[in-house]
Image 1 (cartoon, rainbow, N blue to C red):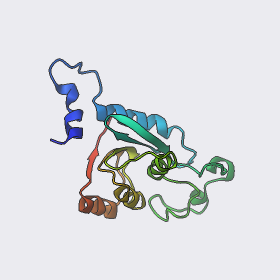
Image 2 (spheres, rainbow, N blue to C red):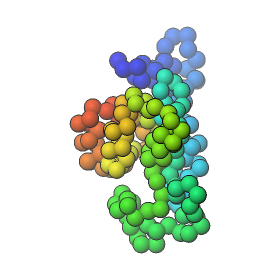
Image 3 (cartoon, helix red, strand yellow):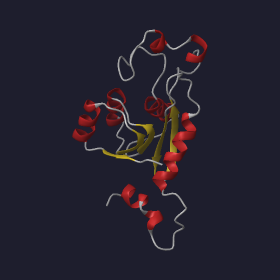
Length: 165
């Protein structure tokens, strides 16, 4: 059993308060709070990187630092009727997974071997960054239909688990 899987079952062990969340449940709940910082008009997504039960960085989706938010200038994707899951390059914002990796790099935090917790399953663009960043496993709550992302995670040997709260 992997360390993360063992952590997930911690609350089930005898003598542990069953109302106490497992570590993955705890971290997933935090991603929901992070997502509330979004500046995206379409969807709030949050992500955190964790290693040794410690939060390394957080990220949410929105415009780059110092630039106007979509709430101020409008949503390019909405205005152009671009369907969700397509043409990711036509957006002012960064994805939460991109932002959490960037925040760690900006602050000099090593993330190799970390676990990513995110409110939504990563898209293929984020998947490539996650793989190259050396992230070892992912927990997500909401699905996202991207077969290429699934294929790449499998090929890279990343552990990916859906965790619904």
